[in-house]
Structures are given as C-alpha cells and as structure tokens.
Length: 328
Image (tube, rainbow, N blue to C red; front, side, top):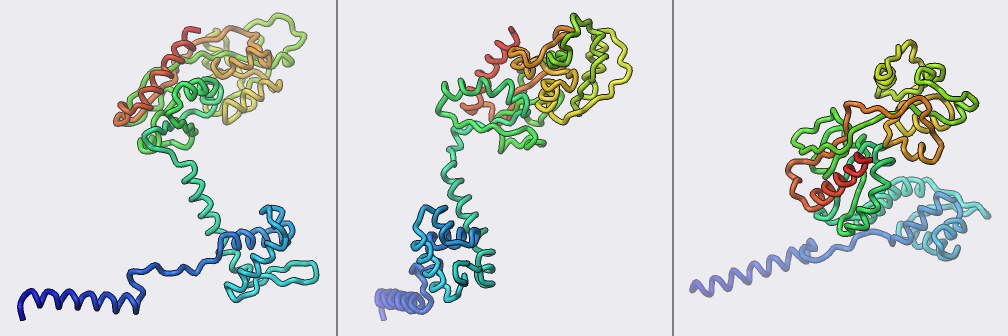
C-alpha cells in the first residue's frame, strides 16, 4: 500500500469515527436546553407572589387568560401541578413552592446580567470619582452638570469615599478627600483650603439682639463625631475657655447641618457646606466670621492613570473650579 493510499485510508477512518461518535453522543451539534419560555417563568413568578392570575396579568400587562395559559403550558412542560385551583382561590402546591425557590434567583440573575449590559460603558470613556459624600453633595454636584455638558464623551460615575476605604486603583480614577488621608502610589493636588464658621438657625437666637462671640457658650453645642477638636479649636481661636462641651453628636455633616437648621443648637461647619444655607437664610453666623483651619481638601489619582484623557481633563477642570472658590 502506498503512502498516499494510507493517508486517504486514515482520513476516511477518522471521518468515520467522528461521524460515529457524533451520532452516538451528540458531539458537534447544539443540544436542546430543557428550559421553558421566559414568559411562562415570569407569569409563574408573578402568580406566586400575588396568588392570583388576575393580579399577575395586571402587573405583566397581559390578559388573565394569557397568564392562565402560560401556567398551564409550564405545568405540561414540567409534568407537574404548580397550583391548585380551589373555587376562586389559587393555592401553590409543594412542587410549585420548591420550583419557585429555585427559579426566582435565576430570574434575578438574568435580570441583573441584562441590566449590567444595558449600563455597560466603554472603559476608555468612563470617569469614576470617589468623594466624601457631603463634600460631593454640597460642593461638587452643583458644578458637575457643567462638566458633563462640556465633556459628553465621558460617562461620569460618582461613588462614596466610604466605599473605598482602601485606595483601589482598578476601581477609581479620581478621589476627592480630606487632608491627612494619604493614598499609596497616588498623585495628589491641593484642591481647597478649609474655613469653618459657627452657624445656627435664626429661630434659635430670635429676640436676643446683637451677640458677642462668647455668647455662643449659652447655647447647645452640636458636634460631628469624627471631628472632636472642632469646638476646642474654634474656641481657642477666639481666646475663649472651652469649659463643658457636652452636646448632641452626629455621624455625618449633612446630619449636623440639618440639626442646626432645625434649631437644635450651634454647629461648626465648613463654609463650603454651609454656604447655600447661609445664602438662603436657613442658617446665620451671628457669633463671628469664618476662620481658616490648617486642613485641606485634595484631588488624587493613581500614578498609572496620570495620562488618561478623562483624568487629565477632569483634573484641570476641577482645579480651575477650585481656584474660583478659593478667590471667593
């Protein structure tokens, strides 16, 4: 037998073997998945929650007969009764309950996967900012619409700095944080200095006439739990003895701000957070003008992202915004 004949024979042999095993084990052809229709599963899930085909139909914008037909088709598909019809009541069988327990997480997973695809962005154009929540709400957000309008090519995502206790360079492009927090392998820029002011509701001092700085000690003092030195430092800057500083304490600046606005007492607030409430008259600063603190707000980003277009563009824009704030 020649080599050519041998090669042909071997080729025929392998073709025969592939065909044989493909037919026997279904190799090389798509296998039919034993899965009912998604419409039937949605009708089943809604019917279990409401125990009513009528209410399930209203939720799904179908007719009652359409839902009933989908459930009947599903029961035939599974060869199991999922519901028992007792007069006008719908009762879930034990089989139906077991099936529901397994199906709902799968429907949730399918929905979440679809939503992730709908909201999926191009990594090259996404700008993820992690910021202190109150700082972001009262200083960044009023300005961010302008950036989004000027740079529609970037998809901006803002997350709380509480979610980024450890600087994760893979998850964050820009971080806006309070001075003293230093992030490894990051480039940092001074963003804003900090000034603070003692504020209260106009109703708290109504009818009291002109007040001196020392009069602040006649009112309840409100505290931020994470800044225990705020009142001692403010009092020391005004050459006042601190004495007792007992008073309500709050976990976040926005809580402290609302407490002051509702007349609970006097609070030490950063001016960038209190500015809007001072401007619209919800708060007043009757004891003294704002004073500077040695603290600052910083803009940082991972060193290996320093050249990304979205990082450079946002950094330059925000530093310009901060310059305007500092001048004012």
